[in-house]
Amino acid sequence: MTDLKKKIRSIPDFPIKNVTFRDITTLMQDGEAFHAACDLFYERYKDRKIDKIVGIDARGFVFGAVLAYRLGIGFVPVRKKGKLPYKTISEKYNLEYGSAEMEIHADAIGRGERIVVIDDLIATGGTIAATVKLVEKLGGKVVECAFLVELPDLKGREAIKDHDVFSAMTFEGE
Image: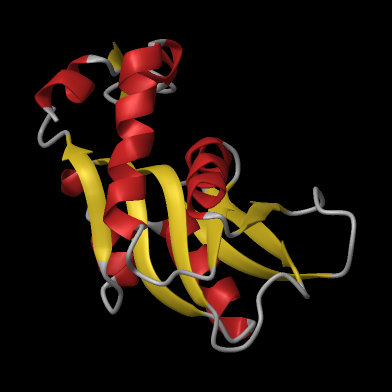
């Protein structure tokens, strides 16, 4: 994991002062590192009897679609409100300044389907908590929430404390 962690660019004071942005695009631009990251998720879930992968807008689409393809299963996008064309259900969540809303197609997940929810990064946990609620409203069972990067100082796991969490790497106190 150390090598993959070195592939992530840290940008201080972005998007606001005293925040360090973890830019995964540098990892994705490196073919070997991107391949290794995708393989890491595949190896974790290849024997877990997963029915679908749910990817969170937008970087969760990258890793989620690759994982679903490798597993030979369906991929379900969860998007910001107003971006999906068919009948949706939605879930609001709080941001540091205000709120936002995530949506999923109402027919995307069947009752009892085993789901892995994936995103590039977990920080405060608002987006993932909203996504988990959407999956569960549709009757899906969240097997695990998976992330390339975790920022444990922001305590995002607390927002989904009743669910298993996998993060490939952490950036603590940095």
